[in-house]
Amino acid sequence: SLAVLLLSLFFLAVPFCAADSADTSGAGQSWRVLPIRSSEEYDLGLVGGEAEQHFHGMARSLYHPSYVYLSQDVAGPWKSIDSGETWVKTLDSGLFVNEGESIEADPADEQTVFVIEHGNWLNEDAQGLYRSTDGGDSWSLVLRKDTNFDSSLHRMYAHNIAYDLASATMTSPATRWYVAFHNDGLYRSDDGGITWSTTPLSSLAGHAT
Figure 1 (cartoon, rainbow, N blue to C red):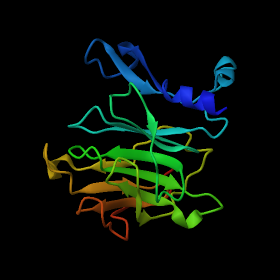
Figure 2 (cartoon, helix red, strand yellow):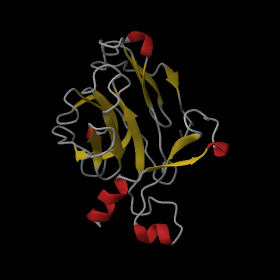
Figure 3 (cartoon, rainbow, N blue to C red):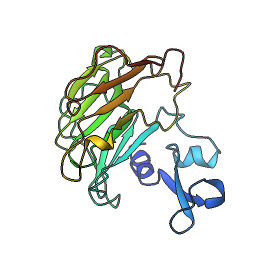
C-alpha cells in the first residue's frame, strides 16, 4: 500500500557491525542500503522489490550535508533538507518518467541534482539522464539514452552518476560530471551537466552494472 511504501522510505538503511564492513570509521558502525520491503515481505523473509519497489540511489550534497536525495523505482526522487529527519516528494515538473535509478547531488550547490530515469511503454523516448537546479521541483532531460534497465538484473542500489571533485570548490558547483549506463557506455559533461558527449568515452557493452 502507499502507506507502507512511504513508511519504508524512512527505513532504507540500517547500521551494521563493523566486522561486516571495511569501513570501521566513527563509532565502529557503518551503513548499508536495504531494499524496500512491505511488512508482509519482511515477515516472509523476501529480499525486497517484489512489487517493483526498488530503492536505487541515495545522494548527499558534500558541502551541504543536510540535503539528501533518494531515487526509487515507481515513485521517482524524494528529498530531505534536514539530514533525513523528514522527507518530501519532489514536485518533478518535466520528469516525464519516474522509474528512478541512480541519483547524485552537486557537492557545492545542494539544489542541483541529477537522476537516471528509465522509460515505460507509455513514454520510452523520455528515458535518460535528468538535471534539476531547484532541488527536484523541475527537471530537464539532458542526455536521452536507453538505460537498458532490467528488473531481473538491476534490483539493487547503484551509483552511476559522479562528479569530478577537482572541478568544484566549496562555493562553486562541479563542472565535470560522468554518467554510466548498463550495457552501453560512460559519458562526460564539462559544463556542469548541461551538455554531454554524444558518443561514449568508454564502452560498457556487455556489462550488466
